[in-house]
Length: 135
Image 1: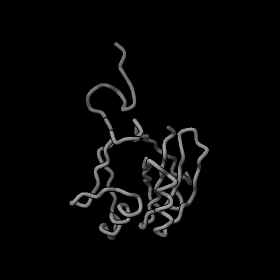
Image 2: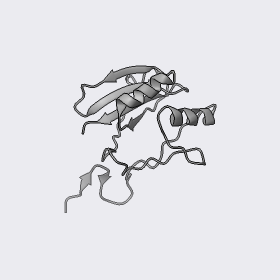
Image 3: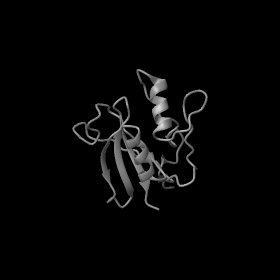
Image 4: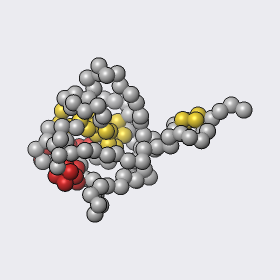
């Protein structure tokens, strides 16, 4: 019998089924959490983190995972080795908040067939990719 493969890999036991969390370190976790709440609209829970539902309205049905060559400049100007792509419901509205809070939009691309993209830095210098999927 042929082995099934799909979005999450092989159908046999002992495999990744999705992303269970995103964790960041910061010199000032409360301030960084407040920035994600106030600027990017994350609804923080009493314990300081957020719960991002995979079945939220307008959320894409899949999560992309990829490994970039170490020589890639895709993450610049961040010096981090990880970049998170957040799916958003309205890129224009979110970028207006980003700019209003004094953050800079590094780049924007509305030409991709998969949707609109923009890149920003959080206050700790982590590069963030924002994606409004094509509907």
